Image (cartoon, rainbow, N blue to C red; front, side, top):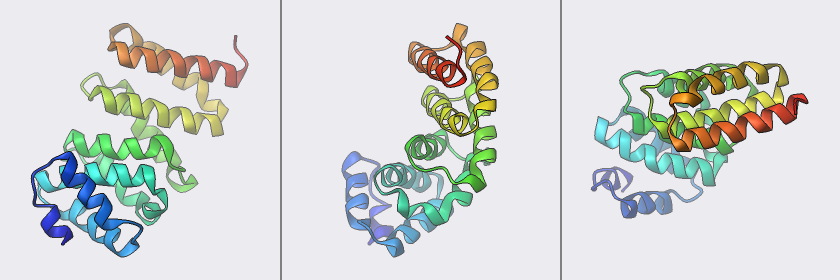
Length: 175
């Protein structure tokens, strides 16, 4: 059934059908991950959309797959939709200690890359901020990185950047 759903047109209704079909099932989620990791470009893009929503709503389902998700972020052949949906997950879900260093490096790279999609850059900024809250020594580096992109950033990225810099300054005691 999941294979059939993943072949439908890429619509919000299809994504909702996939999410509803999976429910809380770890077995069905494992099947979705297999389709996501091994499917065609189109199927991977669509299933990443469902994966992103499930990761936000039911982060316990993605727990066994953190390493695979980080690996997908590093795969240059993956479409930006795949990266966007993965970083969307890590804006809110618990970031395991075993991937936080690698995830921080990938995310700050996305923040600094002017060719990267705005949503990916904004979501990545939030990931870096969440990690810097755990490790305040990272805050000055992140503040400098964000300030360096603000002059040429979109209005949405500037807004996210200013809020992030303000929050990080409070974290490290700078007024």
